[in-house]
Length: 207
Image 1 (cartoon, helix red, strand yellow):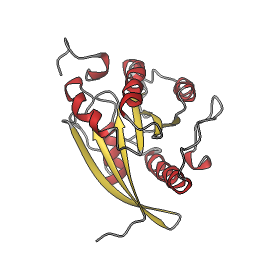
Image 2: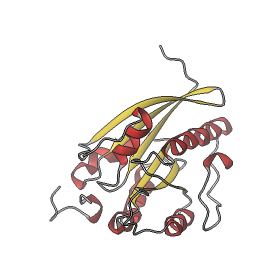
Image 3: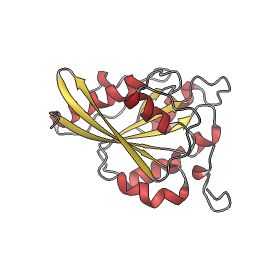
């Protein structure tokens, strides 16, 4: 039996097509799956990491973004230790739907859950969402913020490792992670602070 000190459940949410599955695969398997199809319902992978000599098992749950799966995915919010809300920096609609996803998080997730905003696909040349816009949204909603590229493996390892570090500190302190107090124009380093188009909502459309 595998030995570990902490077990944390991390759930990724966001519009379909923003790259949630690719982020999970890049971190857990070290690969970028070309032509990745839409997730059906919920999928998950496990990876054990070492944080300052302590083994941490991460259960990473990848949820579908389409409306028809929403009743299934909402049930996974409640027991999550961390929720990663992902948008595509080259898709304005995926960013515009963030308030809808936040409302779901506030309704179904634990009030103490670690909330992280991730702007994915920074390798794209057709960026529509500047970094400072994502940072401002994260700051206004007390979220950590990071930009990533699953394709280029940029910041993917850092994202999950720093989440694990923050969750360990939260678990040891037995109190919520402090609110985000970052400065505009700066990325946040977590460990420094501890498919019908007629009926689907904007957040369910494939991008």
